Length: 295
Image (cartoon, rainbow, N blue to C red; front, side):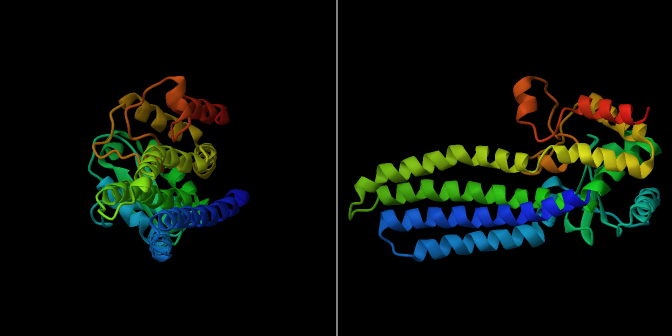
């Protein structure tokens, strides 16, 4: 667990550094081919730095807003608050802020940059269909993500993925502005179009790679840590089975935040390719491992 925490902290620094370097490189390309000096490089690095800053400090709020999560107070759901509080005491974690996503599809996720600045969001559907031991299993899984600092890496990815898409759009627009330039930089038009189209096609791939960089093994580790916390692996296994059988997507399912949830917020579709590019390991395998732990 401690190795995972250290790895996640290092991975966060690497992701942000690579992001700033890549954006700066594209700014350099833009300035080279437009003869605009170093102004585009400064703008690109400024944009990358601001995006990285916001991804570190505000990506949790962005993820919660995208998901339609609403904060609740202790008085609004005392049972949920007491359940989370007891598990936090057992795991040595501070109490996270609690949110509800008004959606009948059962799911949950944790977010934030560290345990002291964390949030836990559960759907209304999860609260409706889960028994207490199953809900404990789901929440213990999410608290494990908080303790392991998985939330830091997973949440930062949300903003960085969006920034990659913006850069793609920027290059495409640069092509059109260049093509309308009467002074004639026609020789550069094809190049701008090529770069813009390549980035447009690469943006979804980069997004997928960033999510997969947040290794899917983190889900197995959080399952194991969650089962260790409750001492009842069957609770989480039963909860995952209910989530699998429900098989309806969240109304506000989003590819930018899908990797945050305990299970994919989209409709579950089998097949080798779907499993290969999924942000989550096969839920059947997770259930099998948990039940093997309980024997």
